[in-house]
Image (cartoon, rainbow, N blue to C red):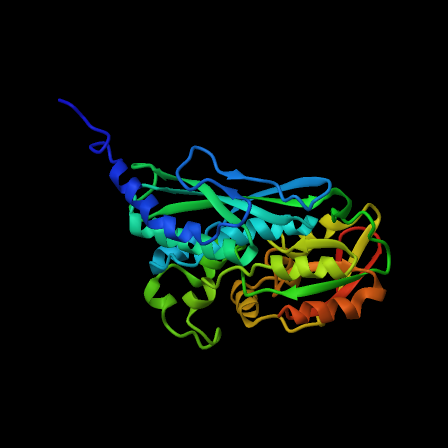
Length: 339
């Protein structure tokens, strides 16, 4: 008895349909560097001619278990923004302008409409960051994922002139740390978040008095993409270091930009921590240090500048629509001190 690929659970026709549906979203991201079209074995992109000594900067990431809420809520149009954000926000920390993005989508039973909806979010994220979506992979893996489940990950490549690489090496004692506000939890800490808010969609869709919102709306708020405002900033200000506040919060991520012998003092009273983090801390009974070692606490990016550039930095970030605050200063030592 013959057994076809379709009999084993993989329908290649659904894959063809998915590609057809996603093409309209993908083409909206194309920039002048794109060569060819979707469907080749590899994506082509030509290097910008204006960069004298180009250095490529690459980053890859996923969205973690935040994806569980997209699946539970059957809302798939924004999770792709998270996938892009987690990658491009990393490479911009080195001063790199994103050039292109590749995505990976895997599921047990392929729904062309669902994957196209996810890709529409990826395309939105690419448009926000100026990256072209030049390819990806859609994998149907029956028996590996439960019905309805899927996973997505991404890979971004950017370019920076070698002389303009930002690596924190020039940071010294007395420099200033400026925080740029987040859009919410972003895409980290969701294994803990799911323990607190649960996975019952009826509860998640019910107004929460303490949260002052429906939990699902707060939990699926897309990760903010900072590329354009950071690119504008580094064109005008001498930025010494940039930290993307992801898993590990302030405690792990801010010290990554410091040279040996330099630490940071953070004034936690310098801004009002968003309500969602207060709710999480209260319900999980976590210490301040545990919170700042897990979540972004309302700050998605931190830039380090000399004290003579603080006012100009704040003005420039505000001009590009960012809400920002002076968080603290650099000191002799190691790590981050919360005050």
